[in-house]
Structures are given as structure tokens and as C-alpha cells.
Image (cartoon, rainbow, N blue to C red):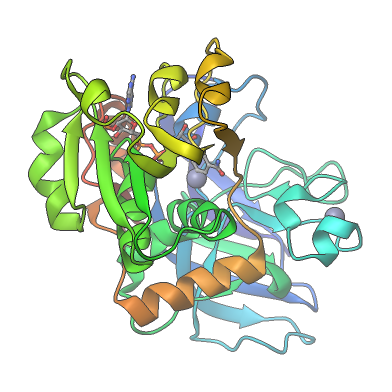
Length: 349
Ligand code: NAP
Ligand code: ZN
Ligand code: ZN
């Protein structure tokens, strides 16, 4: 018997989110059923609910920063028990046999990961629905353990914003003493500051919002620079070993590349809907690198959660009831988020 579950959905691309009843599957042998307590609101939810990346499966129930407690387990489940604090991130399945899956990089599955929402199950026809709801059923291989040291509501954003910033910092070898810039102080950006700081880097925030200066320093940044100030790009030229660009809207990458030191790397994680012209000069003049990064695999996501627990790191959040989700989207688009909206799923009627 499928399990009727309340949710919020965008019925068509760009429409306001409204109540929508979904059905979750009854747990199969390897499944974990989760009572969702909190779900973070990622800018990717907005991009997809508004069809900004093209296409999209509607009705769409967004949400891929899911935390809650296990409420039932299938007969073959070995790693989780009822009552455990768990999380689900951006994907809920993958082929499990390709080289990427075998390497624990399921986000790059050759057959395509099954995204938590706006995707199809492996059967190729059942749509997936995300965490703006009260319950989800996921194979245990794609479920994360939330360490008890992290408050559950402040853990939710780690499942996307946390891993998306942790993974490139690790992969590109950010170390103690490196000079790191984080561009954009939103959900991803504020996690990038905390994580880079915990890895020992010297961190500068580059932001369009001068009003975020005090917060940036409070979050652990060593420096804050307003990108609207004319002098910023001159003053910080060739300053950084590594730049993490989390900006959600189109902006000039060339200007930021000039802030890299020789052999420095800029990694894009922000995924604006519009392309931006790229000039070869700032890459050539300094042998700089421009790269991208996509969330992280299950193993690395667990590593990130454990790292956060060990370093006392959690997201800074503004809890909201689901009824305020459309307003939260508008505020995020204005850059007015400090620093992640998290839906309290007790607010579903
Ligand atoms: P967010 O909370 O809305 O933060 C984005 C920040 O970008 C804003 O707070 C603002 O910071 C800055 N910004 C916004 N508009 C800007 C503009 N026009 N020019 C310059 N800066 C601007 O968004 P998020 O949830 O952190 O997500 C950020 C981006 O990452 C989105 O595109 C999302 O889809 C993408 N994403 C990618 C991955 C991945 O795996 N690669 C994973 C998750 C999300 P300031 O006020 O400081 O300027
Ligand atoms: Zn996300
Ligand atoms: Zn695969």
C-alpha cells in the first residue's frame, strides 16, 4: 500500500508552490522510511521549480537537504534502526555498477543519478519527489547518518550546501595557510567560509552585499570585500590560491580570475541559468585554472558530516513554516538570506 503524504509542489514551471498530496512507496527490503523533520531550501530548488535550467518534471516537490528520524526499515536493512537521526541529500539512487558509482562518486553515475526530485526512479517512469513533505522512503545505501553533535535543523543544509563546498575544498587541496576567497555569501557561501576556515585557510568573502560584512567576520572570515567597490578588484589582484564561486546569477568570471595567484584555481559551484563570455587572457596570464564541482558522493558526504561534528560546524538557519516558502524564494533571489531557510516540517497540516 503506497503511503499518502502531504507535500508542497510547483504545479508548472514558475508557478507558486501549493499543497499537493503525494504517495511514497511502502518500504522494500533495503529501504529506510524517514519521518522528515526539517528540509533546507537550496537555490537549486528555485532554479528547478522555475524551469531555469530547462525542462523539469511537474508537479515538482523540491527539497534535497532532508533530515529526520527513521520511522521504519525493510527486512534487509542493516545500517539503520527506527529512531536514528538520518539525512538524504541530492540523489536517492544510481546504477551502482559503473566506474563512478564503484568509486563512490555516484553524482557522476554514467547512467545518471536518480535525483531526489525532478527525476525518475530506476524504473524510468516513477517521478521522484523531494523533502518539502513529511516522509520519504530511500534505499539505505543512499541514506546518511547525522552525528548527534549537530542540531538536526542546522544539519539539514549540510546535505547539499555542506557537501557542495566541502568536496571542492578537499579535492583541490585547500590547506592551512592557503588564501581562499568565497564569492557570494548565501547558503553555499556561508558553509564554504566555515569549512575553509576549519581547514586552516585564510578566508576572504567577496560579496555584492556590504551589509553582510559583520556576518562574514562572525562566520569566521578574515576579510570581507564588497565587489561593488571600484578598488576591490585592483586591491585583491593575484591575492588568492583558491576561489570558490557560489553565485546563483550570471556575473563576470574574468574579473574574479584576475584575483587568483599564479597556478591558482577557481571552482564554480554556482549554476546560473545564463552563460557568460570567458576570456582566455586571465587564465593564460598566470597559468590559472577554472573548474567546476557537483555536490559529492555518499562516502564523502558522510565524511563531511563527521568533519562538521568534529569541528562544531553547523549551518546558520532561519526556520520557516512551509506556508512561507514562496516568500523565502523571493528573499533568496534578492540575496536576503542569513544564511539558509529551513522548513520545519511539523508545519504541514
Ligand atoms: P543563495 O543562498 O541564494 O546564495 C547565492 C548568493 O549569490 C547570494 O546570497 C548573493 O550573495 C550572491 N548573488 C546573488 N545574485 C547575485 C548577482 N546577480 N551577482 C552577484 N552575486 C549574486 O544560493 P545557494 O543555495 O547558496 O546556491 C548558489 C548557487 O549554487 C545556485 O546557482 C545553486 O543552484 C548552485 N548549487 C550548485 C551545486 C553544485 O553541486 N554545483 C549544489 C547546490 C547549489 P552576496 O549577497 O554575498 O553577493
Ligand atoms: Zn542544493
Ligand atoms: Zn553508476
